[in-house]
Image 1: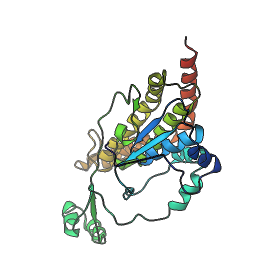
Image 2: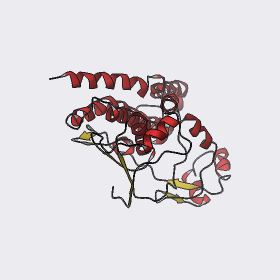
Image 3: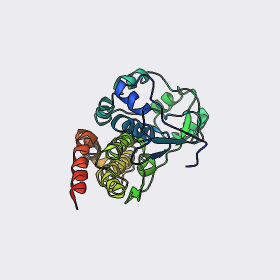
Length: 285
């Protein structure tokens, strides 16, 4: 990402004292400096984590002067909420969750006519079309995904969030996974056992902890979307209704299974394993 601005990261409005003090007092004698390219939810979370747990200097790069598009919304599941509480940001998050987004659009969002919306559902039931006629200002959103990656680090470089595993919104997990990436990466970079010489190996710990989890959730998001639209291969598609009840039951079970990641341990637990691996790495001669 090319950058038009570069500045030391400043604390968010009314952060907890520990976050604020650490973000402002970044030592010039730190063991290394971190460049964060992109001030999305992942990049900003990474800056907050580094500021809370270390004095590592940060350069935050972003091409846009303002953050104008936040998407249709961000789902805050338990895994994400745990991190926000750990970082002392949960109360701040609550202050903005009830504010609707503004009407600004980026180049990935375009307005469409009501007729174009209705044409897309021309074969649906009258009740569905009646509901769609209530949409006064429909818009069309581009969905961008990444193919499954086998690596997310190389040398002293690591990628997080959408750069690593952009996914469909069907599980409401994209932003949360970026936050989880940032939490693990930031804790590793902040750790006293991490040095410039062992940094490539430390980044591989981040990769091995986070990439499999995020990739699996991305795959589940895609398959869930197909199931929602009745176009998932091997599942009920509405064409043959002779065994509709059984087909719908099987589809329901598959969708529920795709959501069971919410019950799994999140990045607070993953951090315990990441730190164990870091200590093992540091103990090697």
